Image (cartoon, rainbow, N blue to C red):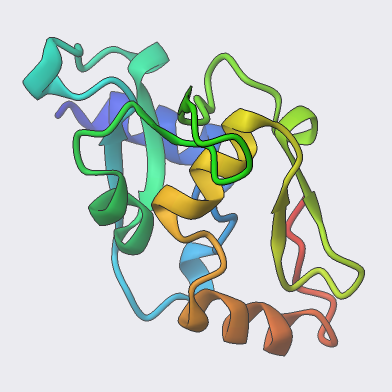
Length: 136
């Protein structure tokens, strides 16, 4: 991938995973560019199809583009950082340590990508008192 494109994706995301909001500066796991619509399903390596993602979210998303909403059981599209607004689908709990899905898209994404997995939850708990989380 051209360095110019990689830098665009990184800067646009403010060095945070565009799904779980983990910050690359504080993460022990590597981050990378993720295809929102997978190349295996015909997705292109164009800016509007690329997201900055932590290894945990990228690995769990794999080639999924939708997942069951745990509330309704119906399939819902996964969150698309290029076309969906985070605030319409997610919120932080009172302690800013867990992401709450507000919509079918949000709930399906929280479950499928396990946005509150233990290592991310614990890192958030450490960063909040230092004023380093949430990043936006």
